[in-house]
Image (cartoon, rainbow, N blue to C red; front, side, top):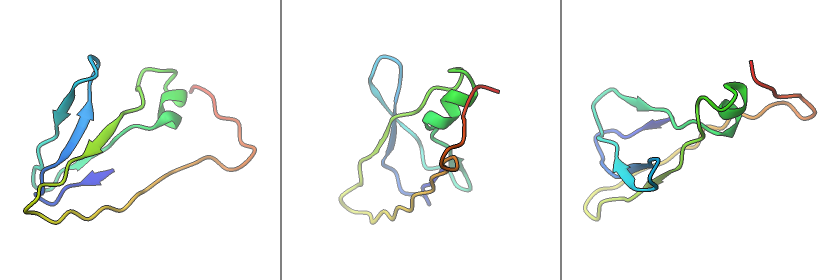
Amino acid sequence: MVVQHDVEGLEVQVGDRSWVAVPPEHDMVTVVAGELLTVVTNGKVPAGVHRVRTPNDRERLSALFVSTPKEGATVRPL
């Protein structure tokens, strides 16, 4: 999950492998799907690839939120 706090720079990769900027809209959270969501949706939601290109004149802070299954758990499509 990404909250940009009005600082541009988040980009996602699309099907043709080009990069598209995600505008930093106020009060918006961007969710980047991971491989776990791809598995449980049986591939209907592909894992996203993203990058951040921080503007030279702005500070950007990042915090990572990751969810992983318990060790030994079986993960399969719903």
